[in-house]
Structure formats: structure tokens, C-alpha cells
Length: 103
Image: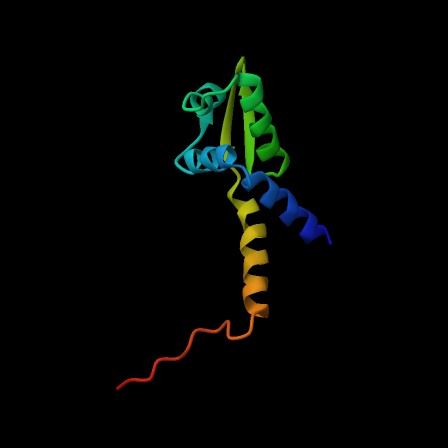
């Protein structure tokens, strides 16, 4: 059940296109809130809510230095999604690739 709750948090965080774009950007490297918010046409408080959802799901983490908050990917959390998808795939009939026979 704990694994299921973690998967729910991650899938919820990734269900929004803005948050997915933030994750894509952070996969390249860390970025400040201002850098992350720049491409989006929304007020900063609304954008920060997206960052909060990502951080609560533990897909990203942040560090504050002075007045600047920097976010980075938390790659270990993506294992929750990988494990969930693998389990579903393993449960499917015919989930194994067909073996190729040489001519």
C-alpha cells in the first residue's frame, strides 16, 4: 500500500504538462525558480505551487542559498514509476516479446 501511495503521488505530479516540462528541464541540470518559471506564462505564486507538488512527490528537491532557491531532479524517485510499470507489464498476458526464429 505504501508503494501504491508513492506511485499515486508521482503520477499525480506528472499528470500536469507544466510539471512534466519542469521535470524535462531539470533532467538537463539544476535550475533556480526564476530560470524554471521564465518559459511559462503564469504568475510566480502559481508556478511555485507546481514546484511544491513536484517536491512533495519527491521527484525534485530544492536547496536555498540566501534568497535563491535551486531545484534539481531526484532520480531515485523515478524508480517508483519504473517498478509500477514493470509490475503491470509482467501481469499482462503475452507480455514477453515473441522469440525470433532464424530463417
